[in-house]
Image: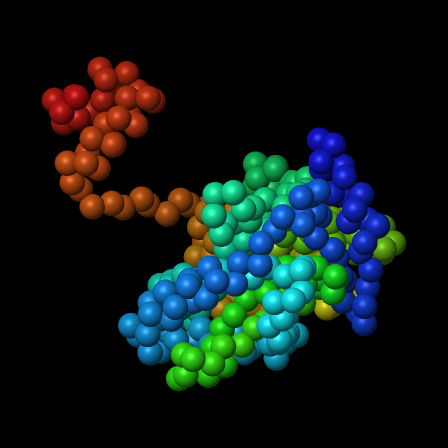
Length: 342
């Protein structure tokens, strides 16, 4: 590890504690934390742009508001009063990412890399990223295919399940409408948990999970949990159905002790899938294909595949395609139809 990574890990170990069953951590700050600007004016300007984009479809504006209200009710964020007299305040910009999904058509993204100007640092500039504690993707994929019974699950709203200590919360403020039908009245919020978008968030989640697993006696199930997570995704394979069912039982119990929920369980064992569906923990994809580390996994046939790349054929895309092919192939081994264009 680099000296910066070692420092971030040491700071994490010194700061993590459990409050009412929830782990709380502090942000791994660099020395120039005090240079972080308030950012309120830029935040208000970006908010107007976000509202304008959302108002093009009224449904999206309401959904955006519902997401924020849901996070408030779940305790992931809290309301605050704007007080410009305080020095330790920073406002985050946020924007919608519209997805082709019937269940979650909008995701709110918080821009922790936004700067007020070229000289001012962003929140991410002031934070250490921390060391990566996840297994290599190749290793995880090989272990996913190693034994007969493959399994995958996700932690629901994983980053938000790690609390943020009060001393750092005012650096994660943001503003939104009190009422989606009234653009003049604004409400300030701040995060009570680790936000998705901060450069250190994956490190804080991984370190919290590792810390939590280390509090349990060694067992095959706990060892599996310690080595088979890629950020918030549990991915691996087991040799028997007995070990598969045992993992499900132990993992749910262990994660619930940290107020985390393991959902979207899926396996190539149909009996297991039926059981977790009855428990309410099965996948909601509604398809034979689920995503595993960027690949498509058909859990019924137990095949992995890559989603085909599609693009609009234009003179520009043809040139880009030929340019990239030239970096990989000798032009004389290209198909005849491409040799002529070459």
